[in-house]
Length: 103
Image (cartoon, rainbow, N blue to C red; front, side, top):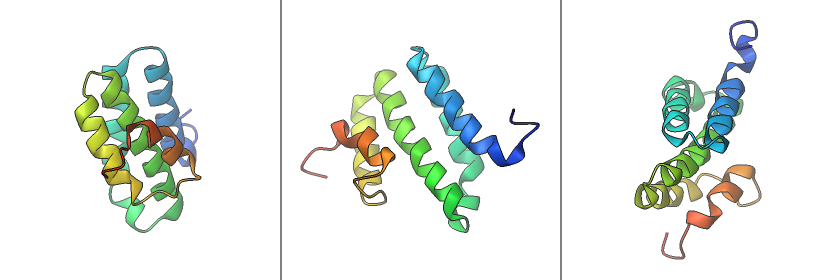
């Protein structure tokens, strides 16, 4: 899919990370989402759509960190992401359990 549809590469990679996470493969999900974040770092500055996908990837990274046994880092990254994501969007909903009142 990613090769035949380059426009769908970012969402396809994010979906893959989410599937890995839901299958209990947290370490692989973390690797997959880190790859997405690395690939989108520069493009997200100038492309709103890529920036939105990147925020979703960051939220999935929070979940993957927690599932991989790093709840401290998950909470830290969730707090950092709250300033970037409005509360009614999916990334904010995903990280809500990790955000304490002290963020």
